[in-house]
Structures are given as C-alpha cells and as structure tokens.
Image (cartoon, rainbow, N blue to C red; front, side, top):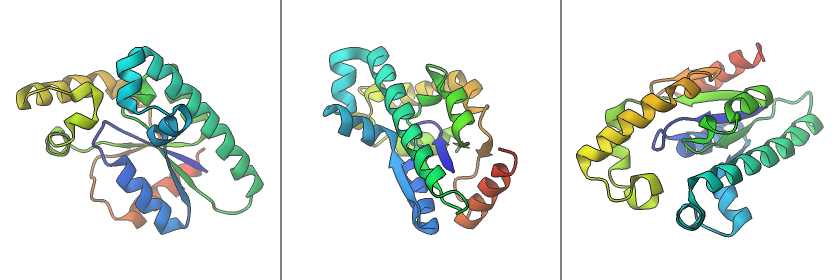
Length: 183
C-alpha cells in the first residue's frame, strides 16, 4: 500500500514518514528529494531558472513515476502487509489533478497542525523554501494563513486527516490500516 503524506510545508511529513517507515520496516520516499535526484537541480534552482509552473509539471511527472514503480512493488508483495510512505510537497495535491491521482493509487494522509505550529517550524527554514524567501514574520504568518486557506479544498479530499501532530505512531498506523479497508 502506498501512503501519501500530505500537508503544508512544515507539517512534519518527512519526519513522520521516516518514523512510520522505521516502525513498520517499510520504505520512506521524499518526493522533493526524488525530484532533485532525477533532475540534478535543487528545488530552489528549478524555481529560479524555470518558475513554479515548470516545477509543478516535473513534480507531477515524478509523482506518477514513483507511484507506478511502487505499485509494481506492492503487487509483487501481494498478500503481505507492506507499506511505502511517500512524503509529498505542500503544493503537490493542488496541481495537475494530483489529489485525484493519489486517492486512486493509495491512501492519502493529511497532516494538519495549527498555523502557530507551522509558523514556528517555518520561521527558521525560510532560506530553504522558495515561496518563503525574504518574508518578515508578519508576512510569513499571513502567507501561511492565506496559502493554507487556498489549499484546504485539496487537502480536505484526503482519506485520513490528522490534526494532532503528536499522535502515537501506533495510533496513526491503526488509522491508516482502518482506512485501507475502504480503499
């Protein structure tokens, strides 16, 4: 089963994905890291040289490629409870019908911590995130609130929604397994 971890930047997708993979003896794949590996360019470089539209096109191509490769691996392991956790970029669900794609190919899990939690995490990571570069604290807070409101309609289509970032791993795994029954 492919588990797509979704949410705003700073929601904890990479951290949780690595923890869940370790807990289950599974694999964690970070979509952004995979995109960097396949293009040979950093996310910042892609944004600066080609713009967001080109980045989103590449992101969708890599999402589909990885999903299809993982689907083959899931099929090879059929009968075994094997998970692949795929951490997606904050905007991934919002472009190119990616949300629909992910819901057809696995379980989508929306990590939805509060705006204050996101702000405290992102305040120190602005240089690494193209959309946040150069924003003052109030601008950052406003950006998070506005962008989250804009993206909520996509995130809200997730099969699983987690608003508490401190759920124990065993509870999160149980929620994912329960959601899988309806998949």
